[in-house]
Image (cartoon, rainbow, N blue to C red; front, side, top):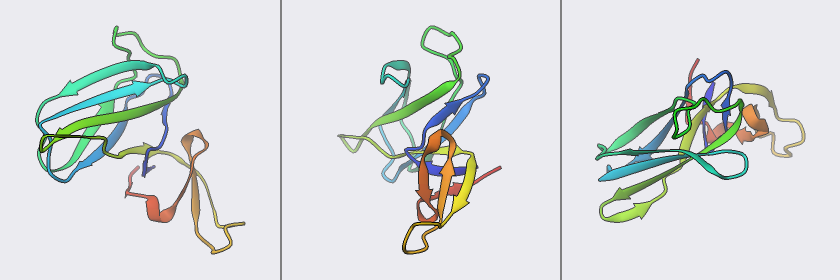
Length: 130
């Protein structure tokens, strides 16, 4: 698995999904929203003050009512209040690599195809996990 910016959240069997956001100045408050494929918010969580650095987020696959959401592709959006300003940090999600190729890139850039059909360059990878 690799951490990629704004990658899709692929929910399978209700397994928790991890993500991180970088907060270079910390935050007074953070809100995480999970949206379904139609863009409807299915889960919202509010967190208090956060220290400078990477904030780990986990979605348990549940909606706000406590029901398990069906398998599918979701999106995570994070809003934060940092130094009195509203910011929307990039969400780095862990995604399974499905293929690796540099065919047809012209400049031999290596691309990873990850869950949800998204392609990212190796330069965009923030972390490698298993």
